[in-house]
Image 1 (tube, rainbow, N blue to C red):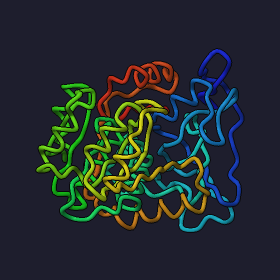
Image 2 (spheres, rainbow, N blue to C red):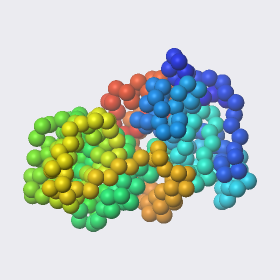
Image 3 (cartoon, rainbow, N blue to C red):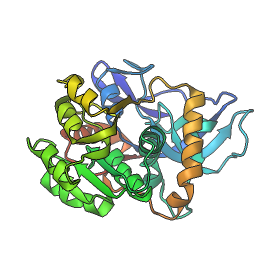
Image 4 (cartoon, one colour):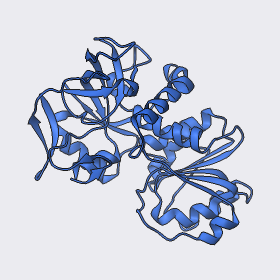
Length: 324
């Protein structure tokens, strides 16, 4: 089968052996894949958790049809249309743990649309609902809101009853589109006065929650823009892995600062997150209340064009691969 494999010369489409499912796995005929920042890291040769390096098949979210099931798998059968969160998915066939595999909820949902959802849903439900414990009437700011994961965060926050939802993007055209996904206010995180804008919008209080996909250069302004006893959830580090941090301001505002990642979670934890999302948001997904725009689609053989598009950081929403 074909697969997008990391080599010394970059990512190349190679012919590799088709995988066979273990007892807890399903084998999926892949129809579409979503791109994520972690994929860009792996494609460059970096490690991401337990995966990475030469020989790695890239990809962590995908959709398709089940073609084989392991002996321990219950409630799934060959022919089921599913969306999955796993590894090694940029290929004709991919494996997924049964607990990270869910039915595509809407018969009219395309494979491409389904492939955009797993990472965004699981990441942001865990950040906003499980860790930030959002309550109706609270205010929330999403750093890096024009990414697929960021757009999902805006929608989940609004669905959970947030009073004011604020999103950031450094691009004016993308900021203008954030309102369509639930943002009441859009700001530029490169504007040196963005934190003051947030304080003004919240009557000087600051937001109750910040979902931070940037870190780095926004760290201290995040503290400034967060309400006393507010929560900052560190999801991503697109703005830098290191930066200045005002420990006194952090203490004075009594901010809870929580880091999240899937890299150090056990399979049991990820299964639990998948189940929680389906129970809490499954009906909303089926009703079309949570969806992501596809900025551009590429064929599997054009994988490097897709990676270049993501690296340029000029997309709004998701980039996908179609596997014919």
